[in-house]
Length: 259
Image (cartoon, rainbow, N blue to C red; front, side, top):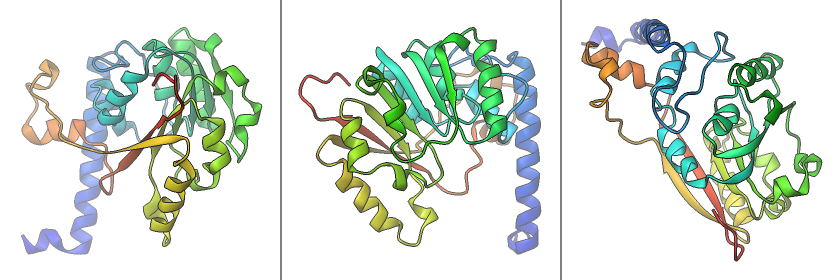
């Protein structure tokens, strides 16, 4: 037992776990024909390439990836547009269209490979004419969006700490009618607590805040997983994160706004 806790041994174990996650994800991807089977994005097809760990594909296919966020996102249907900062492979940006949550998607992604994969994923799902792919989102990025988009959209942000640069009072005011989802990265910074306080203050006039964190997963209903061992089932739903993640949902306070 003590041997397993030694630093070198922990690194070996972590590497093995990640390799196993990748193996299992590839097995499930083949079994499900790279098609999301459960959750709001059910029916979405995922391409063969990825800009991040292929291991995350397993929980995506099962509708378990960031499940709390997905379920909350599913409550915002009927919006004109989905604006995605840090769009990655297009899982959310394309998934929002496949699911019918939004009519049009604007995907901001700084990585060239990610932008290419977003385009491939959009074509694979037949929604390429409704996806606009852009580069990095800089402060004031919203000035380049149509006014009717800003006024009736879901703004979805996962930009590895850069959210504290973009989400000033002016940004929250501009998106005063939007529902905003934000993955939190305050722990990236020594002054993370102060950054969070500033973020809350910036949103206070326009949005009400709901905080979310990763909760339990129920694997009992997945027929596809019944032949897997207990350990492998939990690895299939793992997101491989180094800590428990948190998100915020910002709902507009303006009278007459439908969340």
